[in-house]
Length: 338
Image (cartoon, rainbow, N blue to C red):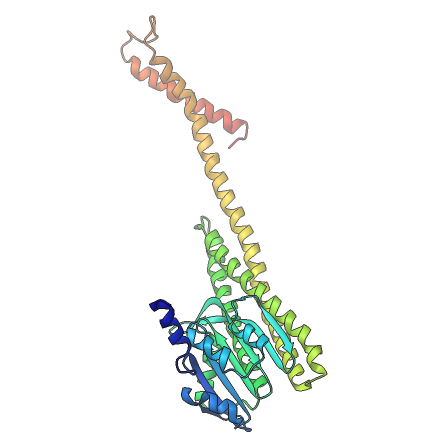
C-alpha cells in the first residue's frame, strides 16, 4: 500500500463524526439542542429526544466512512445517501423515506442560481441530510433553529427545507421577471441593442428550473397516496408541498413563455432593422452604379475619348456622373422603390 492509499485509509477511519456539519437533538416540543460531533453516535444510540437531525458534507471522504459504518440505516438508504447518482428520487424503503431533491447553492452571502443536489433519509425519529456543496435551504433552516424556531417532527423539518427551496425559486422567478422587464424596454426602443443573449440566459435558467420542479412535484404527487395508508400526517404534508411546487412551477413557466415571446419580438425587431439597413445599402449601391459606369468609361485609355481635349472636360464628366445618379434616384422614386 502506497502513501496515498494509507492516507486515504486513515482519513476514512478517523474520528467517525468528522465530516458531520451539524447535528441537533429535538425535544417533543420541537426545540433543538446542538449535538457535539463526538457525541453524535451516542445520541443516535441512546434514542434520547423526539428525533435527531444530522447534516453531512459528502465532499469529506471521512463522512462516507461514517455513513457506511455508523449511520443507523439500511444498506439501500446508505447507497442513496452516499451514492454518485444525481437523478431526482423520492421513494419509500420500509420505514425509511429516501430522496434526492434539488436545491440552490448557498454562496458566501446569499443563494446563487446554481442548482445542486440534497440527499436525505428520513424515519420517524431520524433525518439525515447530505450534500456535496452547501445548499441554501438547509442553511436557512439552521439559522431558523438558531433563532428559536421549533420543529416537533422530522417531516416538519423536511417540509421547511422544501418550503425554503420553493421560496428561493419564487425569488428567482421575480429576478428573471425584472430582467425581462429591462430587456422589454430596450426592445421597444427604435434601435434596441442586441438583447437575444440576455433573453437566452433567462430562458435557459427558467427551463432548467422548470425541469427540476416538474420532476419533483410529480414525485411528491406519486408518493402521497402511498404514504396515506401508513402515515396520514406525512401524506398531507407531502401533498401540500406538491401543491406549492406546482404554484412555483407555474410562475417559472410564465417567465419562460414570456421570455419566448419576447425573444420572438426581439428577433423580429432585429430582422426588421437589418432589412432596413440592407435596403438603404441597396439603394445607395443602385444610385452609385451609373456614376461608377460613367467614371469607368472616362477612365479608359482609348483613342477618341469624349471631352479629352475639351477645356473643363473633367468637370463636365463629373456633372454627367452626378446626373446619372440623380436620374437613377428619380427612377427608383417613380417606381416606388423608395
